[in-house]
Amino acid sequence: MKRAFRKYHRWLSLIVALPLLLTVITGMATTIEREWKLDLGVSSRILLKIHTGEIFHLEAIYPILDGLGLLGLLVTGLSMSGMFGRRRREAQN
Picture (cartoon, rainbow, N blue to C red):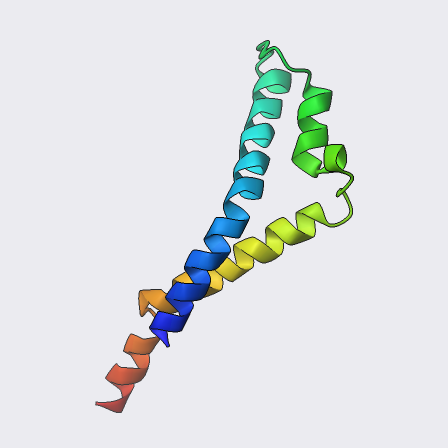
C-alpha cells in the first residue's frame, strides 16, 4: 500500500508543484508590496491576477485545483508516514 501511495504522491507532486509555487510566491509578493510598501517592480494588481489564476482565465477552477492537489498530497503523505498504522498494530498486541 505504501508503495502505491509513494507512486501517487510523486506523480501528484510533479503536477501540483508549479501552480502551488506560483500561488505562494505571488501571494507573498502581493503582501510585501501592499502591506510593507516595498516596490517590487510589478504591480500588485498583476500579482493578484496571477495569484488567482485570472491571467490564465482559470479563476473559477484554479483555487479548487490547488486545494485538491494539496489535499491529495496531504492524504498520500500522511498515509506514508505510518502515523495511522502504528496505533492499529499497538492495539492488536
